Length: 410
Image 1 (cartoon, rainbow, N blue to C red):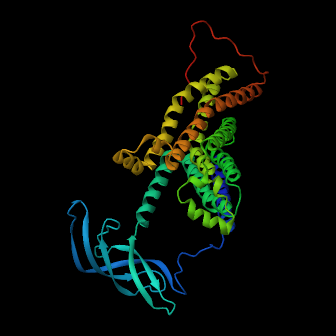
Image 2 (tube, rainbow, N blue to C red; image 1 turned 90 degrees about the vertical axis):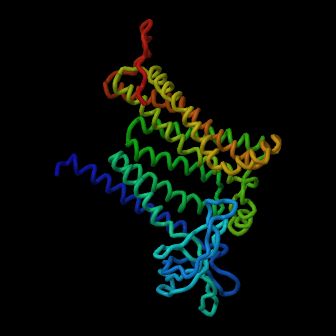
């Protein structure tokens, strides 16, 4: 096999091995003893969640709900066989009540998840239906996404998968454990943002000048957003204490030292990072294309090209963050509309104020990343092009009267 074919394979294998080593190290770092084991009940009783299969439906009285005709309500009695855990292979009978909270109509041969309550004596207390077994369908969806990304994106698509795995691993095994152990959420979020930007953009863009410009722009853009967020957190009297589930988090912080007050700051930084990286690498790539097509283009022209492309993107990116807020808060918005809530009640509620701060702080980061990346990429690419061609950095030449500069392709 030619060397130019072997080298990319070895490089990819090295990246995969490095990711595996990182995942193993991060998993080891994340191990901790929970302050409260939710699978233990009173005394020595315990509860476990196991996979089971429906063998038969022994009794069924189910029909359309009188108010919501599209919903089935009633009762089922089923015989199941437990497929995992200490009761594997054992057949049991369970009742399934179809109501507004749990509306799962069972059928023979279906795999389900059940909760098994066991007494200290080792005998089962009760077995309840928890949910359908959704795992296989979720795995298929994830697999379809990965295959599509690799098939359409090729090598870069595969590297994108590696970047996603790195990000997820960092969140679950590094970032969350750091918060749990009492690290400053603000410092941890900024460090996580910088690390994720470096690794993700290097995997996708490679060791190139445009990647360096995108990384610098992302880091500075996120830092700017952090400063704005800090200011408006203070002015609006908002913090992690105003977030949902803060009472449970306060109980946890009493055992772990977690800083609940800074969790709002961390959540906003993390939620805006993806959009900032997206626009940063897009603008840097566009400026790089202009520089490649015209190596003698000055920094001013490259900067203006990046700004033109960025202007087209910043509106859609900012809109993406706003729509993400709408999608995540859709139920709440419907309730606000249905109850005709007072304006002062809406705008000053903790939930709405936090969502607005998240959406617009992230959008500000996107907007200011455009000129930052355009300027950084223009300067770095100009210096690189001049060095590559063996000429000193050229001053910006005025365009001829009436001439139009080409627009950079996105």
